Length: 354
Image 1 (cartoon, helix red, strand yellow):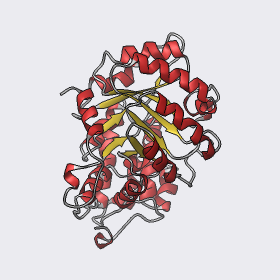
Image 2 (cartoon, helix red, strand yellow; image 1 turned 45 degrees about the vertical axis):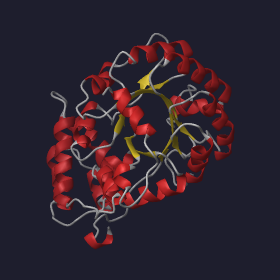
Image 3 (cartoon, one colour; image 1 turned 180 degrees about the vertical axis):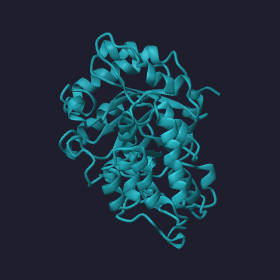
C-alpha cells in the first residue's frame, strides 16, 4: 500500500473505544510537526520506541519562488519508520503554495498539510501560520486553491483563534467548506502560545460539526490524560508533540491503556539510553562541542520536565559534553520507574499507573 492509502485507511477506521475491542478501534496517533525537531534523525529515534501511526514533517517555508527544503525532503525520501509521513507547508502566497503542493505530491507523502497554527511572532507577523487566523477570507481563498491542486488527502493544522477562542466559530464554516480530509485542532490561541488553558471543548465542537475527522492536539502528557481527551472531544485521534519528546514510550503506553493492559514505565537508565540515542543521531560531524550540547538542550528542556526541576536547572547550565553526561547520570543512572509526566519530580511507583 502507498503512504496515501495507509493514511486514508487510518482516517476511515471507526472511532476509538476502550476495553477488549480497543485493538480494532485504535485512535490515530500522530507526531506533531515541530520545527527543528521532527527531522529524519528524530523520526528514526522515536520509531524505535513504538512511535506514532503517522508523522508530520517540520514545515516547508513557502514564498515567492521557493522550493521544498532538501533536509525536510530527506525525512520523506529516506523515511525509516515504515509509517506514512504528511508534508506540511506554511505561507500565504497562493500561487507559491499551489506550486509547492504539486511538487511535494511527486514524493511519497501521505497528505499535504497547511499550517495555520505556528505561534512564533516572526511567522505570524508575516501573516503566515497562526497569523492567517486573523483573516478568515484569506484562509478561504487559500484552502480553495489548495483543495483544487491537491489530489491526495489535504489536511489542515490550526489553532482555535489568534487572540480569542471566540474566533473559532467563524473559522469552522471555512474549514467545513473545503472538503478537508482531516483537521488537527491545537486548542490554544496563537497569542496564548503554550500557556495553560487548553480548550478541549472546542475540539469537541469541531468533531461534532465538521464532516471530516478531527485530531486533538495540545498538552497530551500521559496515557491516562490521552484517554480523557479522547473521551471529552470525540476526536478521531491525537497529535502529540512535546509530550512525545519527553516520553517516546507514550504512543505505546496509550495503545496499552486502550487495550486495558498495564502501562510499562521506563527506568531511569532507559531514559538515559534514549538520551544517548538522541545524541548519536543528532550529532553533526565537524560541529563544535558547545553547539552539539546546545542542540541536545532543545530535547532536555522537554525531557527534564518529567525528571526534576533540579535536573532542568543543572542541564541548562552545562557547556561541555562531559558536564552534560555528568548531570544526566546524576539524575538518570538508576532503575526506578519514571512516569515522565511534567511534574517537579517524575519518579513514580509502578502501582500508580495501571
